[in-house]
Length: 371
Ligand SMILES: *Cc1c(COP(=O)(O)O)cnc(C)c1O
Image 1 (cartoon, protein in one colour):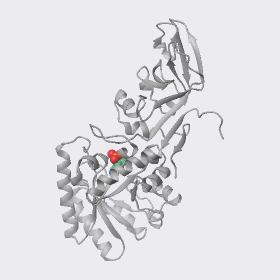
Image 2 (cartoon, rainbow, N blue to C red):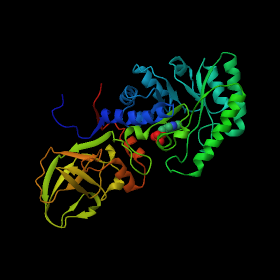
Image 3 (tube, helix red, strand yellow):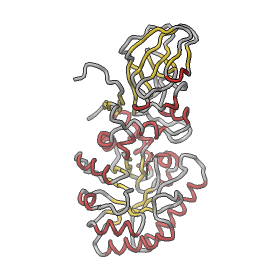
Image 4 (cartoon, helix red, strand yellow):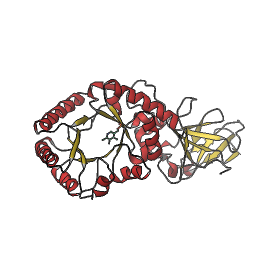
């Protein structure tokens, strides 16, 4: 048992995660859809196995991972729920995935061929409806569908679903969403004409929250499950991750003394500063230098000077801040502490990148609410 607080700690609140999954799975169920919990990138930095278990407890029935390697981590942990994986380097050996009962994605005839060569797969065919990224272009789709239908008729594969991904679901009313939905319908018609009877899935978190007409058989939720709302407006979502540390050292510095590299901040008065032993190597973006607060001893306080690799300095004025006091860098925001979304907005990125960036060996992960 550690008797000292971790230097840098990511606290994952699985009760909050289950709350979010219950909300999202409820929305999906209202339109007859099942819910896939997307746990790629080690569960957006929260820990894929723990997130997967909690999501399944709360009503998700599918799991989604980017790579087959990520899917196999879930299987190795004893998780038996259906898992879809969707992106590999060319010519991967799919046999371990098929043996482990992982559903695979084919975006081209070539990819489907490699999958069929590896065994008797459960396969989802991905149509590109407008992202121009992963997914089969419309002109190659009839070929892909014919090849898959033939493999299924020959008993060499099970075609589970066709699917696609939305580009702008987080911008309500964006015309691309309807355009993608129309292309998705055309792809489905071609698949059924070829004799397939696939399930359909299209919606990410934003689509799940604001386009119930696009839920189809299954929704794939990521960011909203982690409690971060991809849409403008309010939803009853609870941020799952809290990033915290503690005060390692305090000192008085005189008016006119500067703090940290480059001396970009100089004390305008005598003040107490608190040293917090986390930095950009722990996921605090250096771009937040001079632009962030932490929650410390009952209130928000500014971080002054540059964010360093291993440390930041907090201006505490004349307050008596004890060494060892908890410092919340970001969290649920309910007590007034900063959030991952606030960090993202400050430096011009998205909260997805902030929380996923917490996947680092130097940050200790702890779980609350594990069952
Ligand atoms: C990441 C991902 C999702 C989840 O997206 P969110 O916006 O986090 O809900 C869904 N589908 C695919 C294919 C993805 O890559």
